[in-house]
Length: 115
Length: 112
Image (cartoon, rainbow over the protein chains, first blue to last red):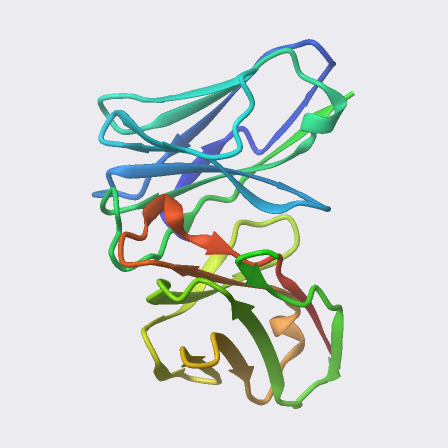
């Protein structure tokens, strides 16, 4: 158990809908990262938050947004969902904004299915 | 060309075999090198972490980094069916964080 929690585990929704994925980092970690993993794309970095502030953006669509709250949990909002958004969404956390050590700790993921 | 190249496999070996998993990279700024293990439908789990060149051993696992060749390896001795998973290499420059780049992962099957 990495100490990172994600809810829900599974989500099935229809095209055009909006969903929210939630992540709680490991105790003491200030950075939260969101990744998308699909069969043909591997792990794709979406966005990083550090202590409530957006730190870096990766391949995140404009239909997606995220935030990190004062208690350090984070939410990833996905709107106007399309079939291609079906994937595993992982949250990871690390101690610092720039870990210096490089390692991140991953949650169990949320499996999103868009029908 | 991707910054990190990793053969997706699958790699199938008999129980007890020595497994060698590899990644190559192009960015000479990478200083931190990680191996993650990911079981089906689970999150990646950090297995090994090394800094710069050299070897690191942890039980049946050995990680090697050859910065001159831009090549990293993970060796698994006495492989077990429970080692069947996807193994992702990852690496980052000194700034780490979002600059960590993951390989595509190699699927390993260890047959009993």
